[in-house]
Image (tube, rainbow, N blue to C red; front, side, top):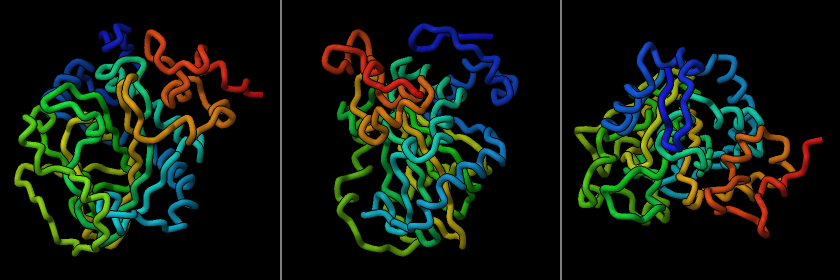
Length: 296
């Protein structure tokens, strides 16, 4: 079975069958459009999860913690991940998440950010936010981003599982007023793990086992939870934006042409070595892929 994506191309559902659980992709997308998120359990094998953990370990061992309340003063974040290991290029091209990206954002979508977030014990809740808020167009509006969350560790009730507000991607602008403010990027005050400045009775914790995937609309309000356990909680979160938007991370500097040359073509396109029709993204009048050295 197949369906049309946003760009008009047919989606081959055959490679997704293992994860669609007998439901057509259109059914999953209807749920995505209604709730703003979907969860697929046990998508990655334990071996693939172990490979990603091993690639991240040197950077986690450095124990560089967040600079403010938003990043998490007891969290480790790893950026520019496609420059660090090819295993993450493979991850950002995973066909299950790209089915939702292509359907919502079209074939010229870009990788806006890709980072690992390791919540240490004692980390507090993040401010509520949505990941395409850098596109400052009043709500309600279409989602111009898709965020994905890969559980490297189990995400549990107590270790800081991402919390979502189902349906919030459809809320009016006034319902977003209490969400993320710029103060969160300057606040360096340590809080108690039980301190929750904005509790919500309608919040849902995205509890899922290691190797699972959550896909969320860029307009869905969510936050990292508080880690009240005695062990870290690690995720990898590739985030995508529509092709005409500015990426959160400057990907062509994070992964310059000589490094991009070693990656698969689809990964290079997602980084920004690509064109949003008719010609957005050109370099000196030519397609940016022409400036990537031939892999030798």
